Length: 66
Image (cartoon, rainbow, N blue to C red; front, side):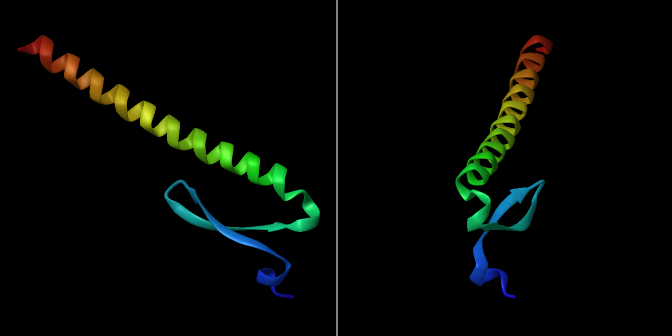
């Protein structure tokens, strides 16, 4: 049984690693893809939010020390 023939294969970033995820047609791929897309979007947005917060904190700290 080959997974490539039975489902749709795609890679999703998961903590810096690429994990192969297979979606089977009889398991409601629309809901699964929506959840996976929302998860990836939330991880990326949280990462950018933390990065911008740290950059802003450093900027304010350096502005107060000079």
